[in-house]
Image (cartoon, rainbow, N blue to C red; front, side):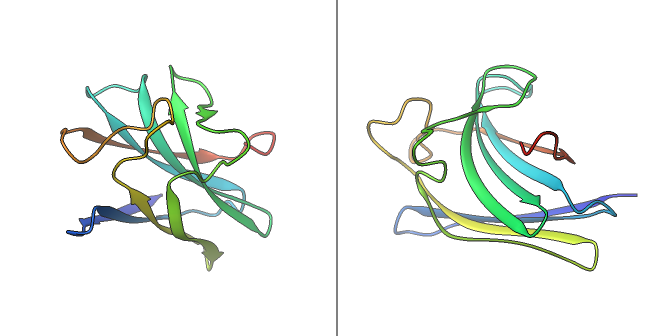
Length: 130
């Protein structure tokens, strides 16, 4: 079975912090947190944490439907993300990051300073490195 945990906190300085973990026997796996205006996948700002082999990444994406979300900025996959960490040890994928509440000039980067969003969680095996 798979266990997913998530903690989210927001600081007065305008940074939001999230961390999540998933327990699984897979080594190539992803977990994701989506900010959504409704309770369904599609048209969501997604932060994905991916571990493939020994490499871990945190990326900003936009999910326009139920397929692999596109990177928000192809030349900078972690736009708006700082202090990120992804690790996989003893069957536990752990991801932590800081995400800026706002980021001007980036299409589909949801502004978390003045709006409410549903948090959607997803997980799955890595397919073709994505």
